[in-house]
Amino acid sequence: MGQARSDDASHLKNYIAQYAAPDPSDKGLEPPIYADNKSHALLGVNHPQLAGMLCPIKHAKAYHEDPKKVQAELQNGIIKIHSAAWPAFIYEGTPPGKDFDPDNVQEGFLKGYYLKWVSLLLP
Image (tube, rainbow, N blue to C red):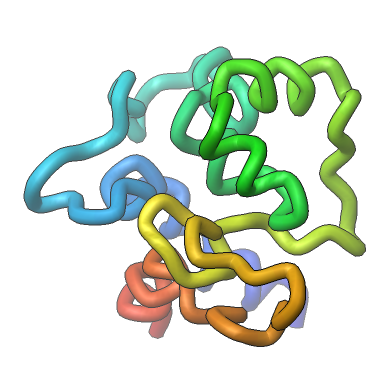
C-alpha cells in the first residue's frame, strides 16, 4: 500500500512550484522554483513564500506582519514545525492563513487554495 501511495503522489513534486502560488496563471513564486533543479537551497522554509505556507497556523499572523523575522525563526528552529501544528496552507486565505481566527480554528480548515490545486492532480 505504501508504495502505491508513493507512486500516486510522486508526480506532485513537479507541480509544487506551479500551484504554490495563489494564482499561478497570474504570477508564480518569487524566486521561482524549477522542477529539474536538484538544489534544495530555496525549498521549504528557505523560500519566502513556501515558508509562509509551512508556518504553523498559530504563527501565521506574525508571519504576515514580519515575514523575514518569522522565516528566520523557522529556519533557526525557534518556531518549530511538528505534526501537532497545522501548516498555514491547510487554511483558507490568500496568503495562506490570512483569515485564520484563533477563536474558531475550524473555520477555513482544509479550505486552503493549495489543497484545491493538489486535489485536481490526484488520480
